[in-house]
Image (cartoon, rainbow, N blue to C red; front, top):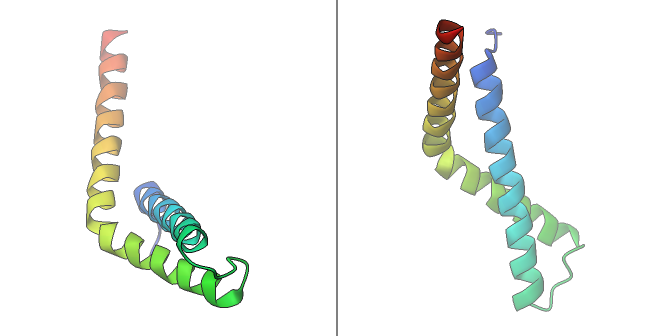
Length: 84
């Protein structure tokens, strides 16, 4: 098993957040536009699959965003150290 860096953990967390938000949105849409009960297992599983699919599709974009935020944070910390 390879060691996980803080960046890898951040990327995984962002991907999970995207998946959970997409899952919630799919459940809301199913509730609003169909007569299906959102508490049933097929709806829950289908929503989770859609959420994971959305997270996988957005993976390259979210990785770049995380890398950019980390880079900017490191630069900000360096600037703060140098100005002291």
